[in-house]
Image 1 (tube, rainbow, N blue to C red):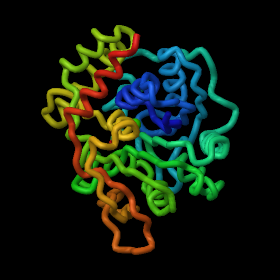
Image 2: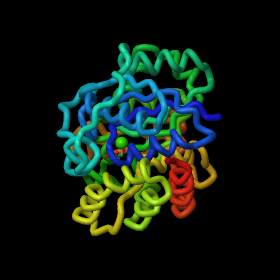
Image 3: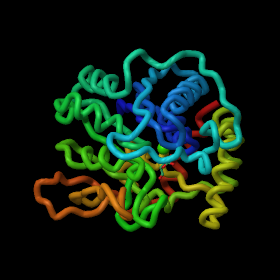
Image 4: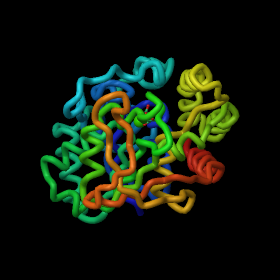
Length: 305
Ligand code: BDR
Ligand code: CA
């Protein structure tokens, strides 16, 4: 059983990832932490709780960072994910409130409660993870692995060079990539190859009317963005692809690389290879069996209600 804590800014592809993790029989989704990004940290916490309600589970959620560690905050990505995070869908009120502690402290507490066992799956900006590491560097030796959706070697999406999660807080990302802990980076090199098209969302809705139906409704807005921006017939499955790398690493071609993040200038947020031998090696996904990833996603969502 994989004990997973998801750090997230839900977000439509975040919802896909959270449903995948919540439904997968080999994942114990032990908590979620919210971060600014697609929406504010407050809306992200609310949305994470709403998704937990929809799953019929009682997943603890801690609210996290409202802004990046150092740089001036960028605007939220409402043009991609909608005003409330789930496309055109109106805000929903969750049945419970976030925890009393903040995201970084909840991450620290969770890692110490299950030493060597917790997989951190950040699928938003890395601010909470970097802050947890700053408050308690000992967690580096106690986390089982980080499986991160973010970055890219060949290209970006918000700029030619930067992927959105890294661009939103490059200082945090650089601190996370510099730390001595096992990291897998699931970046744009692979997530841009995994596309869910309208027929896939139809399948989700048919197989699981409530959970899949919700994804289907939210995804209409998301697919309109991808069509307008890239001329695509479908949406890139960034965040669920990272969770699928937790359960099915064999679908990915991973290469050990040292990375650094460009902090300023027109390449800010770029994740690039580093020659610095003191930087740790990171397992960077450079290849993927996109059809296998998509099939896995659809089959797990199909087990939902
Ligand atoms: C990442 O940015 C966000 O908009 C998505 O939810 C995903 O985590 C893709 O670049
Ligand atoms: Ca996200």
